[in-house]
Length: 60
Image (cartoon, rainbow, N blue to C red; front, side):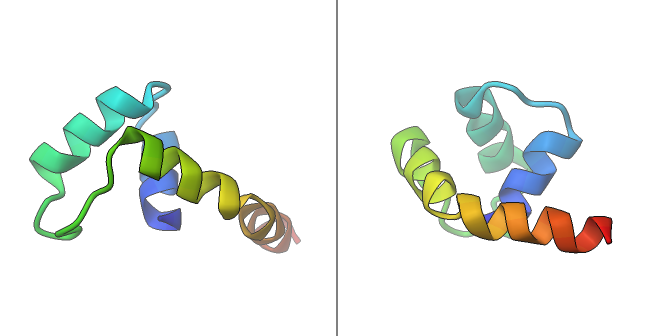
C-alpha cells in the first residue's frame, strides 16, 4: 500500500479513482490484487501514522 501511495504522489494523481484505474492497467503484474477505491482509501487511512513516521525518518 505504501508503494502504491508513493507512486500515486510521484506521478501526480490526485484522484484515487483515476489512480487505481491507471495502476490496474500498467502495474497489474507488480500488484496482482488492487483494492477498489473504498478499500484503498480505508487502508491508507490506517497507515497514516506509519507513513508520517516514514516521511519524518527519511527527512532526517
